[in-house]
Picture 1 (tube, rainbow, N blue to C red):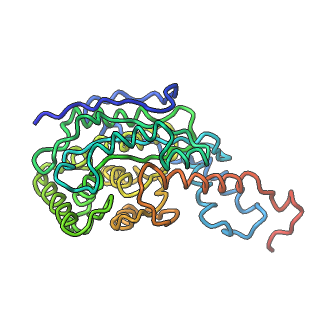
Picture 2 (tube, helix red, strand yellow):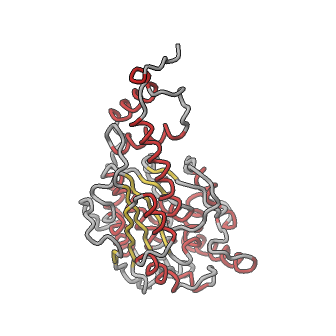
Picture 3 (tube, rainbow, N blue to C red):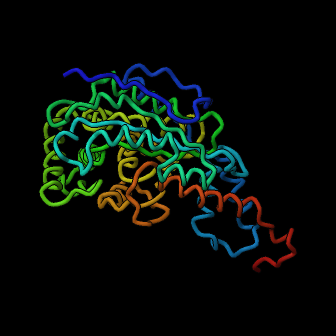
Length: 358
């Protein structure tokens, strides 16, 4: 079955300057790139660790805010940490399995929501405005969905590579944290199939209501996930093949953005279940591939907590959100700003004339 190649349109911030990216023509090129990912900056980590105990507070009193400031230093590659130019990339794609009745909404909603993003009417627009985050939306060939993965691979290799490259090209040149999110009717089905293929178990363990399906519709959705994983099982030799066979353009773009951010020393905030499932395909290929990523929140999608635990990630908060659009990731920027402000702005015991512990 022929799959149309994803064409990418950038809907916001069209003057955006992006990081130079390596030339990736095949999935093997991308596999090779994964072997060259940089690690954390040891000098920046040491500098953060040296400053933290000097600040006017008991050790550990700011909890995860202290961890976040050190994490930013490690992956930005400098101390003190900065959070002056946060950015958000939302990738939109359509899925062939939407025709199987797995979503409460029709596939045309993806196009309609992209239009809403570009006109400032979505939740993500309000959150980005509130927290000073530059929003960039990428529509990936919405008129030509991926293939129905219960009958054929969702993407051929060329299409998957193009979508990955679209994500790689979406990392702004001067941003200091990148929030990732998605939009795509039926993409919880694709994410559930990816997670099921990665971590095993029954399809029902990974399949949830998504946009609000229940009863027979949820049972049908679970059957679709199980059918897809079973059909392609012999070909699912690594995370990228799982992505290609069961994922979607927007999931592949998230994978590309995660890797390009690592190369550019940009820490990443992952949004909900779909975003986390996309990034998860890298974990079995390289154990530290997601060390520069934090899962922003626990989605109300039931499998998200299980997925985060499998990845060894402890999300920052749980507000019962299940919107997507990078909404939880952008909300977490407020926490990062608090962490940076405290680490950089607090006085030391010596500066404040406050007695340290004996």
